[in-house]
Amino acid sequence: MGRSGQRLRVHNPQPVALTIAGSDCGGNAGIQADLRAFHGFGVHGCTAIAALTAQNPTGVAGILPATSDFLRLQLQTIFDGYYVGAIKTGMLLNAELIEVVAEVLARHKGIPLVVDPVMVASSGARLLEDAAVEALTRRLLPLASLITPNLPEAAVLLGRPVAGGAAAGEAARELAALFRCAVLVKGGHGSFSNQASDFLCVGEGQLACLRTPVVRHPLSLHGTGCTLSAAITAALATGCSLADAVAEGKSYVYEAIRHGRTLGPQAAVLGMVNRRDRRRVLSAVIHPPPPRQRKRPHKAP
Image (cartoon, rainbow, N blue to C red; front, side, top):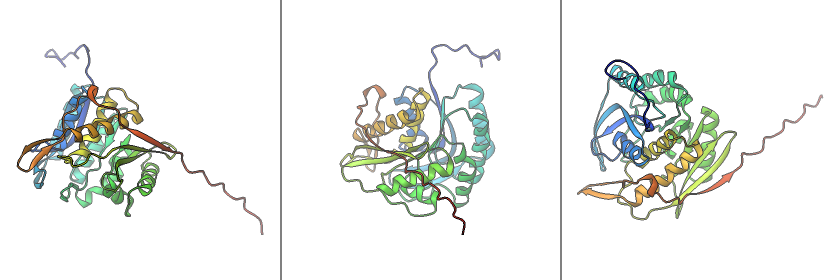
């Protein structure tokens, strides 16, 4: 609103995306990675910070959560003042913060929501308390348009190990049926030779395997999961369909890895990529849903 309390007239509107996540003081992951991706898509970024972290690419030294009341206040203030076109969540740390996020987002169900179920950092640090997993699955994932687990996170959500390859695709199908939303299982933790393969399941069990070349000897992979979900969110905010947004996001991350930069003795960062400069290198293989088994008629004895 303006100073008079009147709503501002829309003039040359810019798409707006909101990230609800943790802050990375080193600027590689979390809120900072999200804003970098939003900027690459020409999208204005709003942020609700769920936690502060002290970290660099070698590990997480400490985490300080926001209070639930202050996280709620951030969210309410953003929705009061901005036309939010898409939302993503990242590290939410504990059940109390997840409950607040779910409570607020339930009032904005018309806005696409990408949930990156951040549980464990690539360094091995736990980023989601054990008690929070139940709150995540019960309260937040049912609100999602898309969830983007990696293989270890998919295993936690399914309660069983998930390998790469075809098993990752089946995990995407199972999670899509369980939470009734689209699911992108990231294969970065698996072994896919010369291709980086992720599996997208949307509606009725239809599965697509999305592939980009593997970048050999990258300077940095820190923050790739955050960057992917943020790029997808930014593409959704610009009006892309979900499938197109996922394709845009995966190609964006490939280019960001290719253009990594060294920033210090123990630090490198993903490169900054403008959407218009991104090359379309993605290939997709579509796997139709498995045929439904017909029920055999019951025979009377």
